[in-house]
Image 1: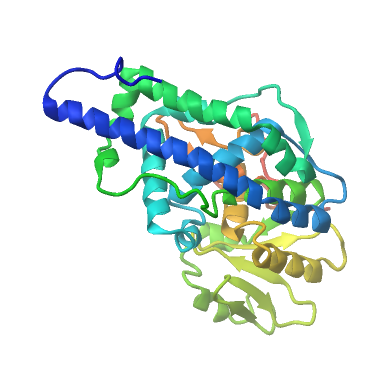
Image 2: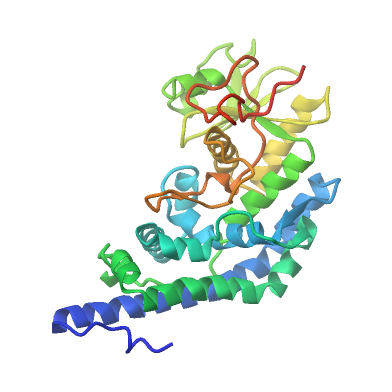
Length: 359
């Protein structure tokens, strides 16, 4: 594509600025596409591990959603909020800079975001989660089409270009490109796949309602450890590196304290009555095998459901262009026995969107 026909002739300073932004955009999108090829090639072992361990029913997912989860990886690394503190520690400064500029930029230019993450119900091939890697490899053209459509819009639509360029972030001295062998670009994909497989195989999450009502009840992992008998007669012990806490009873129940929201969650297994032990093993397996980020998985699923978006677009776009990445995780979250969590979206104005508690 020739950029010459696009450039608006004006002052030498603005002309230089346009060239600089165009060059940065081309570098970022081209390097992102290359890095996604590498990341996708490295993700097969993790997905196969999830499938062989959990997926008894051969879960299927629309290819559209898998592509959206894959291309949302850079935005997840650049976005504040759920899981960002953990992701922040896993990537180098070059990737962080590029991810942050990318994420801010696409929110200033909603048309670009819509090209990257098509919204609404579209016809899409259903594929087995276990075939994700091979299907994504065969769908390279669709991936390229999304990135190309976003870049072409920037290069041919002046208002869109100016909206994105107006952030002033594209002319910094930092290198806005993604190294070819960048890890963690598939974190969003892993979270989506893990949440889908867990959900289809009967797993769900529960939240300690007190921590929703008062986010300052447990402001630190230490405060959970000092909670006395709140989570069991003998208290709990916590792993500070993972924020996983386990009760000191024989049937040890496992909890996750979220550093992002200060909420406390548990995973519930479909295999009663041994669910406490199985849920504890599953929680640690998710962390140890890098299947998902527990904060992204559980906080994300709660936020997605709370907004009434469970089962909708993997990447949400607000009316002002804001990205909503919570639905990268769509694990069912159990609701209260009576009513619904205050402030949550009600389906048809009356139905709580959370999973009903068991009878």
